[in-house]
Image (tube, rainbow, N blue to C red; front, top):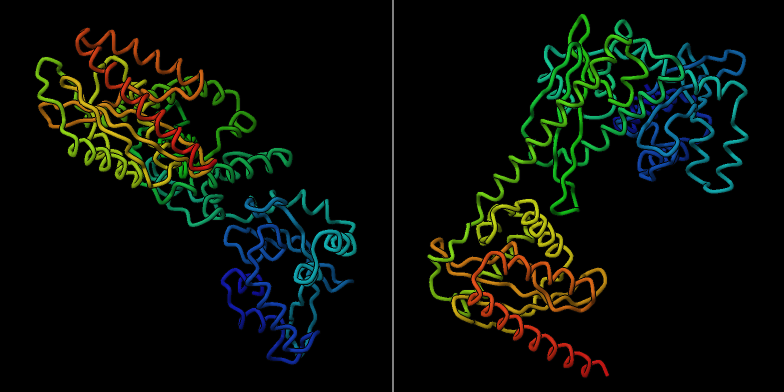
Length: 465
């Protein structure tokens, strides 16, 4: 009752289970209230109180010592640096009722840390502690009732909807289907915890399309999510499943080979190959969908050069959409010369996303230059992290779909040798895809960009002299 009250942040229930209403407290009432209320408020990740208050903690009674009047409770919380811990709670009876006292370690966690905390830990250890810690996983598997799903599809939905780690553990195979040894049980829980933590970080994002591969009693699905705080980066999480007599169960891939029998092991390679194919097809489809927003340039049908103000407005709109992670709308601002290298084009877009995320919002437009049917906007950006300036040239063309920024060409003022090499590869691409006359027009714009940039760099130097 006491631990359950703590997990629900219910101070009054916690105090009642300690005997506050029955005059059974070890400490004065105000002191006890302070102990428990302060403990419930602790958010330090590795405090012992997190075993009681975090909803992902799984706890079981491991031993009752009648000589010491003490109950050993085993906790498992994958979010903590030390995931398994035994806490010893003194108990006492009064008026025919049993009440719990605070574990000495919980009191110590309120007043000590560092060396003092280590000393308290040593003082309050018991001879059976390490033995009980090793038993925690087997007790967890013994007491948690497996919740199989009717299909792999339903199992994925249940896993993604799991409120916390406890709900996810119930999706693991039942003890009738698999019998992991004591040595295998901790890794099984840790592998599940790793999967839960990874997917928990992306739960707020739109759920990706799900394709399931099957091979005998095994099934698996790759889930590709955008990585939070890493614009333009995607990560694939694999959900592996196994079928038992009562339905489908979740099983982390790292645990499959150590637990399943030889017959099922033979299916793993075939299923892995199917997953790889699904993942590749999903990425191709994502690329295709993203690039459907980009205009393919027809050089014959180009209109007059984009005028200055229109180019500036489009540049600002593009950067604004990048910063708000509206990728589809940002790509609507773009065009590409060469549709044969989609990977390179999307890499350029990824760099643009990351750049917009890292740069300050004060993009400085240094100038706009036109030559023939081409326009170029010279820009100075500044990194929020390093303060360094960069000087990209945005090229614009007037297509049948309106003014567009050229996405697959990345030319910048060469502040180092590496940038000069990248520029050269972009010039090589331009030579392949546009006629000589157009190439000379772009060269004219870039020469102007270099002059404008060099002037700005000199002016900045004078300001700081």
